[in-house]
Image: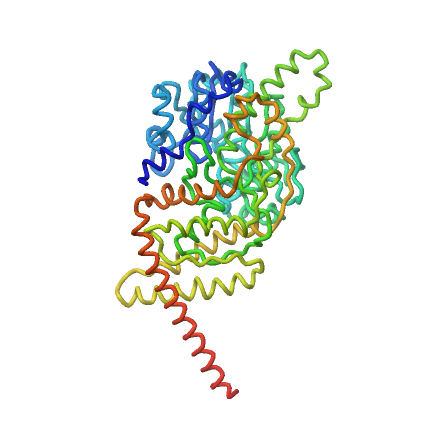
Length: 525
């Protein structure tokens, strides 16, 4: 099957969206203006596509974008719609571009970097979806705070200026409270007051702030989770009494169905593990295979965001019309949605990786560097032993040969980065959290049959086996950039890699045996 044919086959049938009647959620967005931050990110692109396709009656979609990596906001905006995930949108809604409007700004700046005329234009916004964030776990505290905390505060200030605002959806993370074993759909005390953190960032230079960072983080594993916890406190305080809610996804992975099965454009988190193992670079991970891997397909997150805005507006209208609304707790406590898989469809890391291995070995890539050999190690010392013999020792041999033949050694540097990445992942792969997602289930039950069909929230009917079949193919097509038609050649090449793998293992075993024998003779044993 060609790559183009695969993508077409994996796209959902557009007729199925209308199979059970009109959509209340889609109708809600008709003639509304939506402001989206983080539109150039993974979830942002999916939100843009889904709103413009499934909620096509929307009046205007404002995209807040900033210049980045030498590209202006206009350049990034023009490149945005070249992505394959917009192919279905272009086919079904060819006039969608007329509804999209670029707003140049930066959530990391005071005032969002908005010009006065742009700020005035955004007063017409009805729905705000705040998804902009830095998701790097090793980000400096200053940058993480400016984007994740200050950005949220500035967005709320902007929302205050919107007289017809119906909903403000803040995308957080299920691990914003990862210092707790059980995470309910409620707010928890922040690790530090948001205003105090912002003041610290403003008055301290880089060196003292970096020195203070471990103290501030405490039990938090990284600046991402820490800053997201503080950002939630900004939402909770919500001094302006805006209609707000929080969507907390767990570990986001490729799409399940919408707009195409298996699409992803980054190697963060679990995706990086799968890609690293598939190409033969990653061979060991400090991970308890019996722990639940709380992975969530991206389109479930997108569905929840879109539906949450609708529900928030519906609840607000109901409260306004209710003479006894002062006693309604929903006004005082913004709703939170834990978008997780562990409540309805739990899967362990071991079972997840076993399915990935089974499907992956059926379609090896032409771009595999080495033969697949991957092990999840519960104990850190065992993982480190594996890393020495399966990562560092082969890297030393390969780089030595590269120097001899006059090529640049690269493998040792690559493994330094891989070990840094895997050390971050191990925190989430060796611990267990329990979540409550009753809010998501309530939201799903509230939907009409048409909306339950179009905006799937409940994972009861979800199949990990079916998902992983498409997931591994999506990684091959979208991340590794290896079209599926190379399959037969890849199988032949992979057989050669397997022979080379076992040959190298034999050589390494011989070297180890010789070293041990030499040591025994030297010690006179």
